[in-house]
Image 1 (tube, one colour):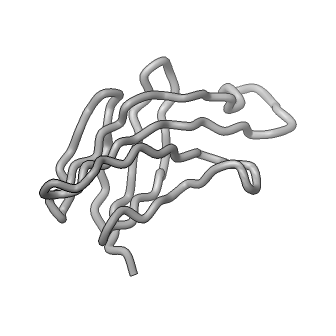
Image 2: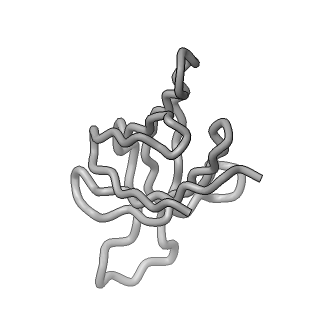
Length: 103
């Protein structure tokens, strides 16, 4: 497993030579720290994956806590599997992602 942390607008090369870019924070409805909420909420980030070589870029979203049927926390990209592990708080929160080999 390979763990990476991306700030908004940052790009990182993945083990297979492809590149992953954190393009934007789509929304953040998470319960603020120190506040009791009925639902924990969810945040959604948009990422762009550029495969190695001349493949077409793929834009997709990952969620911290998606409601059933309304998003996902992970995505398979070619031979890799990317999972959103955590998302910091703030206007431009850093995203921590786990990258593993797709089975």
